[in-house]
Image (cartoon, rainbow, N blue to C red; front, side, top):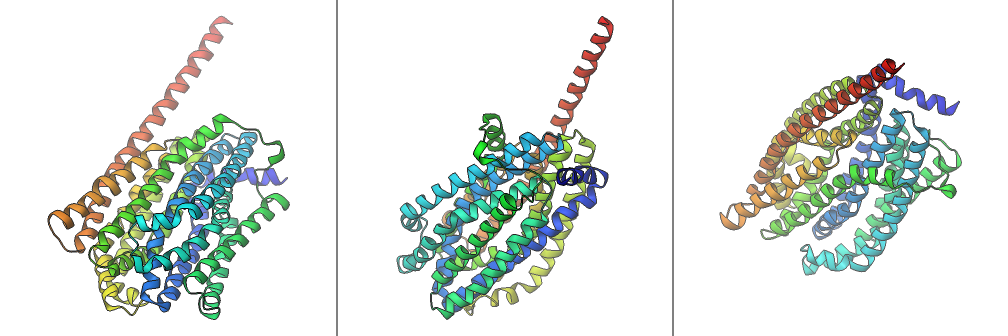
Length: 470
């Protein structure tokens, strides 16, 4: 009965794709908004400790994003593969794909924890943390890395549920964890006087609770449509290859973004460490803009994967156009709001006039990229849903390495331009990458449509031959 109820979700999505997109995206938006509030509140609390603490936390962001970037990329591969098997009504392989996702999560969590404890402090030095801030930065990271296993597993649990079209459950669980994190932050940072270490400990404790809640729901309550039998786990090179083919390019793209963030920190610190803080604070504030983009893009991965698996390419095109146009309009609205309120937003994080001024200038330049960000983001994620993993990696490499970092370095170190030209470099790179991603999406759709036409013609020829023989 439960499986029939879950399976009916596919028919529901096919009957009303537009409603299905918002049914997937809206709960995810609320969950991510809670997460965004946490990220903002976390920085506000740390900023109240000291400006150095805020900067030390900012230096940690690219390093943290490195490990989680790999996880989110592979998680998106799991989402796409599970969705495709469900769309094709192949529950056995959908179950096996989910089990592969959990095994991957355990392995990655152990590897990241070991690597972080072994080489984390040295890496902080490599990415440019000033000597006077190294203790603060390392005291935060060495605690965070102990909770990596919980963060990684939570991502894979969420990816599995998203693949079967259930985004509400992960939102409730992760939203509750975020609220717990917000409650623990002031208690541990100020009540116990732990400073940045308290912020890290609050994150670890809340993420542990989130992971345990997922385990209880999936393995004890058996909430999901997919079922797990890890004792009888059957390794499949074909499934693993599909997950890696779709997910690894996305992982590499997020690694590039992480390395890009670290490189930008090194360029910015040549001006002042306040520029690093302003850049990272601005980035966290921008997460509020990315929430609807990511939610719509993630919902499209599920829908495109299911529609593609069900061989409904007409619905694939329809839902892509609908989702992308709505995301672009949201980008325009956020751009107007952030341009006007930039000084007010930055003042909430710090009383440092220099950081406020730098952050304001950053936001008022980068907002012009907001309508174009969802074009590149959605194009890459949709191509994942269709089974093309590489485009998202190449477009990210183009945007971050070939354009953004190269232009920023050229403007600053060759032309001796001011710090604002670093933001201009990011703006230019976003516009170019959006155009490339859109053209690539067009190519991908044409390729799968041509492939489907060839398959249909072969089927007709085969049936015709059998009839003639009869």
